[in-house]
Length: 87
Image (cartoon, rainbow, N blue to C red):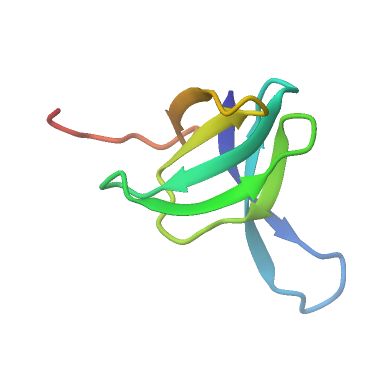
């Protein structure tokens, strides 16, 4: 599974930039959950064929993918971010 942040600008003059969370996982991933630095749950988003593209929930540091059978595939940090923890 890969999770990254993507800044998107509409092609109209003066359009604001949007920051999206993009998650790509196996096709049997049904939803993606987001968590902050303290591992607190932030949000949950349905996946289509293992892919989620949503506005970035504030504070997101990691994501968890869950299959259609309810099995967690674990959590991953956002690609390109370094999480420094002492645990």
